Amino acid sequence: MLVPAIVIRTDGKSYQDAAGGNLEPEQYRKMFIGGLTSSTTDETLKEFYSKWGTLVDCVVMRDPATKRSRGFGFVDAAMANRPHIIDGKTVDPKRAVPREQSQRSEANISSKRLYVSGVREEHTEDMFKEHFGKYGNILKCEIIADKNTGKPRGFAFITFDDYDAVDKCVLIKSHMINNYRCDVKKALSKEEMAKVFFLAWNF
Image (cartoon, rainbow, N blue to C red; front, side, top):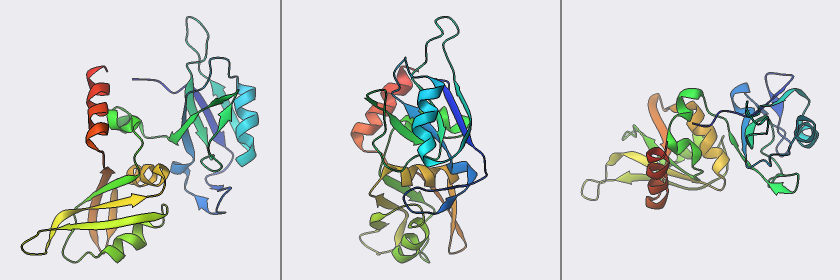
């Protein structure tokens, strides 16, 4: 499993999103940045990401033997204004996940579709739109129902216009909706599942 290469933290427990002006919790501020060039330095990264907030810590983790940048890392507060181009290369920003979640191969896959389990008869699509709409712009909300009874089969799918919304939902994992607990995870296509299997096989 890859180890974080760059850590940048802001000086507060929340930050102002450059796009919407909303304050986000601390758990959302840390970003994983993949695809950095080996020549990227602390100064280059800090200069680029300081556009979105005051950074108080920036450390490029390097290979112990070669001292070269490992090409990926963590940054706070900068999902706005993508794509991000650093040292002439487009990098891959994602929400950083806790260590236990990072061990799962699907953590490396970006998806705009969210799978929701624990759906009850008391739930409606409007409830899901209201709850999950806080995390991003919803394109489609679908509670899967039994064809014969019309009752929910216990799960739903939420499609956003950006994978970052899914990443934020998954960070919380369990959501209380109409006083019932619903668990979430990334909804992956067959092609994405095959990629997850490949990553796990080559772990």
